[in-house]
Image 1 (cartoon, helix red, strand yellow):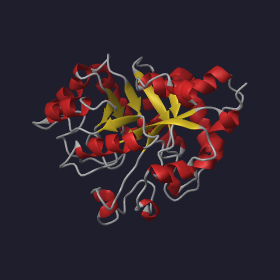
Image 2 (tube, helix red, strand yellow):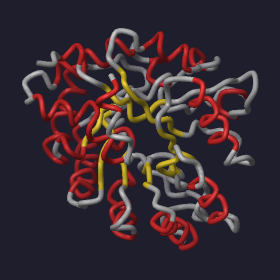
Image 3 (cartoon, one colour):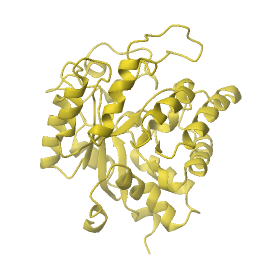
Image 4 (cartoon, rainbow, N blue to C red):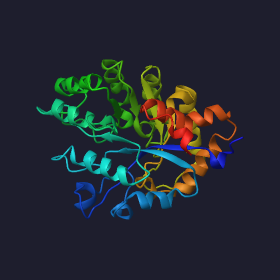
Length: 310
């Protein structure tokens, strides 16, 4: 019998970066005062496989999925090239979520190039969104309402790629229409749909959108990034959110993820995954396997032999 401490983990969302060799505007330029977790000085340093393996040594991580990390948008393919080369020399990652703008003239060219990499399984392309729930202004070009953006999104099916959806809670209901445009494409909602506003009204808004998305059969969700600006990692609040999402989506459409090193701003990897294990300790072993590894393997079409190698 596998115990919780040794359960196999596929971390479905993390980042690597080398600031000595590559350019990431938010990490290399002036600090963004509006960063969603607050001061992020702690992560403005290289984070490479050796650092990740050091952080994860207390847990049985057998595979990982690398998500695009705001690499220089003038070189959208560069990050995938770099990560694939990194993967050849290290145990991780085992898959890549690349980047491609959907509303540009060269969108299909970039999507096709991303699809040419063996490890690229998905695209994350953040649409332009409102800065806050009550904002009245936002850039239409590149938003989910932009027909060019929508047409670019539809290309993912042609190239057999998933879509990693990252929008704040006030755009979740709007995203239902987007998901319906691509019913044959797996859509993986990032970071629980960002329940940042933990007030009753804020959670009601988040819940309305996330419940609507859960009804779409091609959606999955990452149970990750529970950090709140100006607050500590709250076990009881986050446990309620995790259990609610598992109830909505089922373990077969939920996957735990670290969002490291970003989540390091609030919590260590050891404590993060200890918390995950505690939250689902009463679940069946089959459900735990889904949450910690099998859903990620299925959603991103990873080699199932990962589970037999370790």
